[in-house]
Length: 242
Image (cartoon, rainbow, N blue to C red; front, side, top):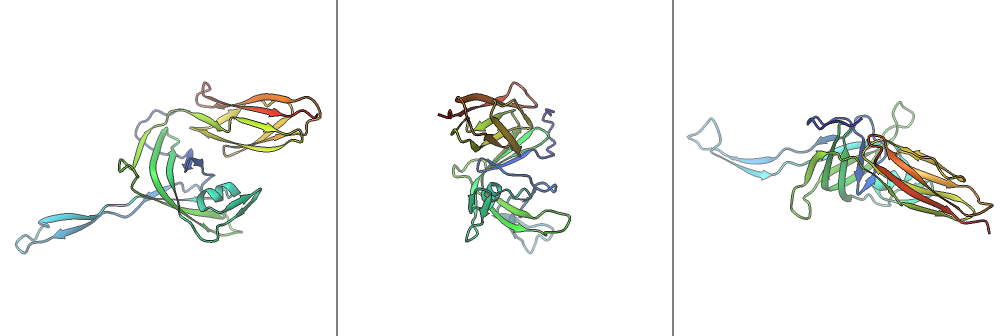
């Protein structure tokens, strides 16, 4: 469903940090808070009902918090650093703060784009209870390098893109990944013979079976549900057996 922008921002479709889609977060959503501005107030003996001067000492801050619960290796690396080897994530030896832009897509048809954030993540929670273990993420808005507006809000323009747009496999087959960046839900078209895929949170794993014949070539389309005219096409190829 496509919503007209009526000014009410609700629901959550996607979160991207450093141009990478973050996995599923807890149903508490994103908490946007921070510290209030600090002021110096000057009082006069003769004026007792209000300060005679008020000077801002510090601006207010913007801090966003959420809990990542989809702890796939790449998701963990994207919010805490470290290294990924296959299905294994190794946390960094020392905690790190990550820097980059943040983009939030609301389910009611708006985009919030923040130019520069610092992100700190910590594994927190219980194992064995009713909730999943997660990574508590805290992001603080910092002044952008260009000194301009730190963030903006605007109606989401429907879009979908794929990275990469071409996958090549050896004759022995194997798995390769496609990242889909989209403004909402999407569907996948049919795959050429010899290929299969799995979709998890916008991340596509394409599998090519071993090829015992001629070279395989074809494409697969990913189609935005809200606007079928918006498509991303990925070319697939696999070497012949001999």
